Length: 289
Image (cartoon, rainbow, N blue to C red; front, side, top):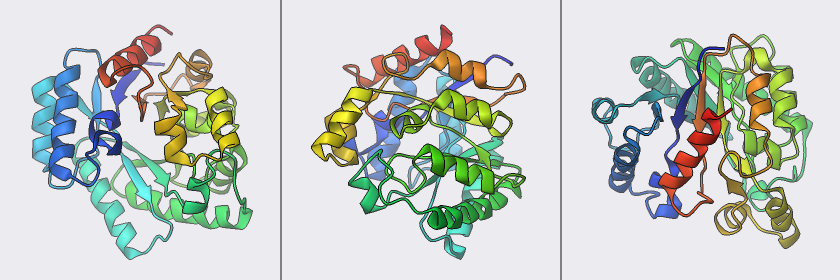
């Protein structure tokens, strides 16, 4: 394996727990602040998820000014994949291709039923998962047309949450343009073994989101009937790589020798006292393996 490229999804600088959600100007400021805070840190890339109103040229200029490259971003696959959704995917694919990126993470939306019951596979339905697999393959085809590999990225509180659901989508999409972009903690909280599932689908892994989780806090969230926001923002289920349950040495060992994708640090809600410390701790742990 070539030396891992480690990037960052700067959610702690841009999202709702920093009072920026729905405020594009503040999201742009948060994105630029993340680059300034982490300049010369060893982080190599920033996820190409541009806030509304930010031009591609402005993003490129900001990354270059602070010594970063673009790293694969995220495209949310809606519950209904219609022409508008495919057009949005095409715009994201074009953006990634113009940035020279060859992968993108594709994630499902979070329906209210599962948002209220995170991590437990609430109301399972194999037929629904099969329909979602078809939608993800259609979106992956749009990205593939632009030379970008769409990677299935499961999420807590989505209909693609449990080990069984993730494997069902991957098995149904075998031979298609859809790859796999696992998030270590999203998998672990929902009861999957990240090392095992990455090993089992290693030839389809094009990138990894690295975060950790506290199993006892996840269990407490379930016992208390906490929804996703309460579990993550209030109870701090998420934590930095190396501070929770995930075997990151095993995760890296499970990747194939040919793996050349990105490892993206994504600690949505920092567990350490501040977001910069959180990111630097995560980076140090991953580089130590």
